[in-house]
Image (cartoon, rainbow, N blue to C red):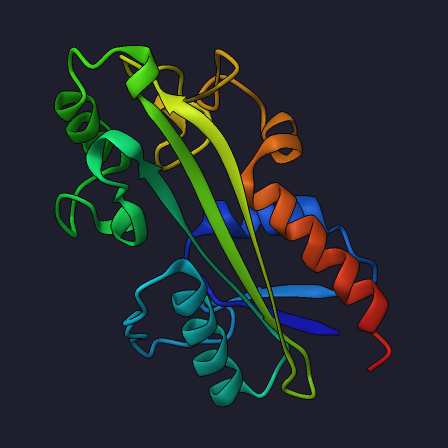
Length: 196
């Protein structure tokens, strides 16, 4: 069975493949499906944006679809960057430049006020068009410097129990990350419903 992962982000596709590990299920990216339509993520929450992406791709391709919307919330910055995490500071910035913006805004802020969390909402629409959603978080805090080169996005400035996502392997990250926890719930659901 083919499942379309509604993303062009190669890092996310790698994580989905690594965690799902489902026999007889082939994950396809939007690029694999030659899907080039712009999806207007007009929702006000991760959950809404995840659903919007999944529904649009499912309606166009008529294949089971997985979509995630995820991002970073920082208490000190009034939960920014939030749903705008992927384009925080401008559309054309690199991940490292986005991290630098946050580090600059957090300069001098004590550790107790650097509390942050990653949030991931995943929507799955099966071949019958039934929607299932899960949302998971990973609590941590923002580092004072850019640490390591592993992961992607804000990983090199996010710490959990003094361990930076920028220094650990993908497999280690999967155990504790927001996306790892959410994908495992989706995997359980797919395995239970795969006959439908």
